[in-house]
Amino acid sequence: MKKFLKWLGIAVAVAAVAGFLAFLYFIPPFDSIPPEEISRGAGEAGPDLAAIADPGERAIAERGRYLVTIGSCADCHATPGPQGPQLKEMYLAGGMKVSRRGVGTHISMNLTPDAETGLGKWSDDDIKRVLRNGLAPDGRAIPGHVMPWPAFSNWTEEDRHAVVTYLRHTRPIAHRIPTPTPDVVVSDPTAQDEGLGGKDYAAADAR
Image (cartoon, rainbow, N blue to C red):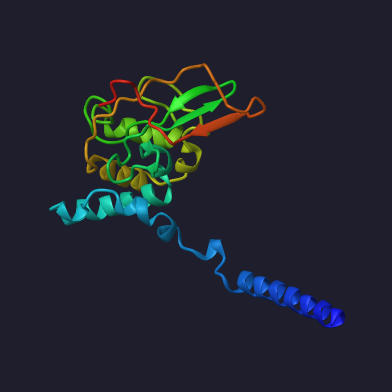
C-alpha cells in the first residue's frame, strides 16, 4: 500500500509539472500582443475624432492619437486615482509625481488645451520643441527620465505636428499642476528615484 501511495504521489507530481509546463507553452508570449491592444484603454479614452469636419485634419489627428497611445503618454499624464488612472474623466490632465535624487520632484503636466492650467497658452512650436529637445517655453529643461523626449526626438516633424493636432482636440480640463521643486522625498532610502500614482498630486487649487 505504501509503495502504491508513493508511486501515486510521484505520478500526481509529474502530472502537475507537465500541466504547468503545458500552460506556459500554450499561453501567448507578451511581446506578441500588438501595442495597440496593450494601450487600447488609453486610446479609447480620448476625444471622438469623427467630429472633426475636415477629413485631412481628422486623418492627421488620428495619426496623433496613434502616437500618443503607443507612446504611453496616458501612463503618466492621466490623473492617478485610488482605482488606477482616471482615463475617461481626466484624460491627459496630469498629476503623477516623479522624484529623482539630484534632479528634484516633478508632477506630470496637464496636456489638455485648457487655457489656464494646460497647453492652451502654448504655441504649436512650443509643444513641438518640448517633443524635440525637452525645452519648455520658459527655457526650463525637462529631464529625459521625467518625459521621454529623447525617444520622441526621433519622430518626424509630421509626427510632431500630428501629436499637436490631436492634443488640440482633447477636452480642456482645469487642473493646475505645481512647478517642479528641487526637494526629493522617497519612501525607500536606497532608491535613486520614485514614481507615485494612487492619488492626484496636482496643486491644492487644481480645479
